[in-house]
Image 1 (cartoon, rainbow, N blue to C red):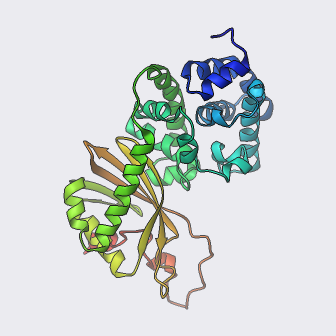
Image 2 (cartoon, one colour; image 1 turned 90 degrees about the vertical axis):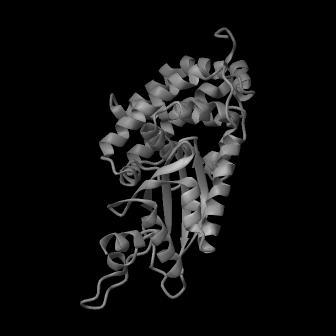
Image 3 (spheres, rainbow, N blue to C red; image 1 turned 60 degrees about the vertical axis):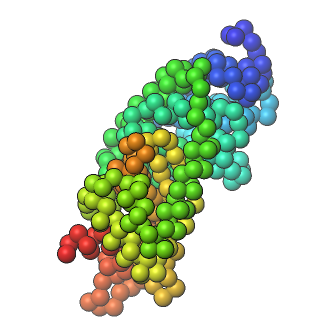
Length: 337
């Protein structure tokens, strides 16, 4: 296969030939690394940019319009990733940052669904350990928890640990991709669709007053919840928290789902009541770890407020100080009673 041209390899990769894609990445690795070093110097950031570009190639090889120019396409992915790092202190997800026009057309999940490699990629992601898999899923497939800082906050980790796990994840992903290339793969699209239905059914059941039943059926009795710096154990905390939010008029709407067999992320819009628009932040991500299909660990990460807090009346705290910072915010109150 190494004797084939770039155009032939690209067409084969777009048709689902995983070996062809591996040959392309190996063939152009030196050029990709050269671009990263030219822009960022001999730094860990340069290595990260090359590794990110490899992940982008796995997900978006179907977007290459000129197969003979795939080398230039790969170098462009690296170059734009490097420039994004230089322009901002915040990390911009490579998949969304390298081509702003293409990024507006589809989400990363939709791009995966559009070509034959998606199930192979997800099968490889399943081979990662759950802690590494979670940071990889957030970085490359979530909508709002993609920067190193936000991932660190969501997972309760130092930023350095996030960087380390992402580096481990990219290296392990490459190994897993090679190891799973010839195996049968789960239907990643069906898994995500099933998880989205689960999110919708869970919220609908909660609004009917049946959240306790859902917890008993699908969640571990001793599930661990971490939210707003508070850690609680047991499904009773979750039930009281959800009931408190619903009583306050807060509703949740799923906007994006990322799912593997043992790690699931539900990203939600938070819809506050008209008479209390600052009750909750605009969104929340549910980061769930599963064991044999049951949720055993839940971390809630809340989207930052986009508007500046209003000036409080003297002696009266701001909404950010008093209002629940998340769905199931009553967990905090119930845990202190």
